[in-house]
Length: 331
Ligand code: CP3
Image (tube, rainbow, N blue to C red; front, side, top):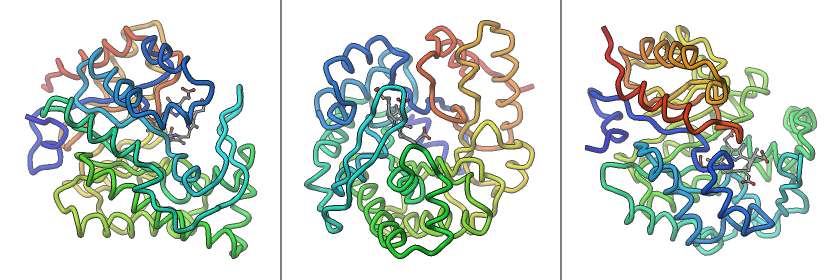
């Protein structure tokens, strides 16, 4: 039984588990592959290594889902922007859009081919997740030079023409990228709006929820059976104006309020603070995992972190959390 896909049906029996950024620098086997590349984005373009890195956390931890190894910044790169990861800096984007009509099926074919191959290699009971950044978060990286989100907000609030033209192109490309991933074998997809929470409430609606809802409905029309999870960071208690299949929520959210404000049939995903994967005291880890499990017992729930794993995460904490979730019995 594919526990992740079951979680979106009427009644859930077991709580599945996977981790945001589960393939990454805390894993020695990832470091080994990573060291072959100077540039992170080149790894995201190499079919054989994408497949291997995607499967590493499944092989090691037997998690319930694999997420295709890629990055949200492949879309800006495909559009012609220059994407760089410099030491001790976040991602940096420069240049301009070269081709608004870029054919993603061609430009990102290695990503789609990797999905195809990974789906074949992965056991049927494991889900393969595809993903994309949301238009707002991608715009933050494109216009935010050196993480200055106030500049990006300024452009948006000022109704800057160029900003909104790029935003329109991004909305279209995010849709196409997710569609291509589903067509190539992704069992479900997730949309990351990691920077939604920096906006005021009017613009959360306008720049986060509205385009996501549009993309969501376009995908649903063609793929009604493919679950879609939305991660709009720090906005889980807002009214999104529609009920997605799944909502991933961050560790900073008030759980009671999330439970109260979200549709009872919606599957919730989250929300352990990744710092628990670094700390020494195992009792504290156990308390927090049990607290999350207990608060979610009336709901369909996929156990996960509230944000991505940090490079300092300890393998033994990850193993411990998985055991706790799988062994959990609610009284
Ligand atoms: O979850 C997975 O295992 C799949 C792979 C995945 C990566 N990035 C790989 C990655 C996913 C789902 C992402 C999503 C992503 N990328 C998001 C949305 C989720 C979130 O964290 O909010 C964002 C905002 C990005 C942009 C990005 N890419 C950042 C901020 C960084 C970190 C920069 C740094 O050096 O810490 C990346 C790089 C990145 N993406 C790494 C990995 C494993 C680390 C780079 C490396 O290995 O050198």
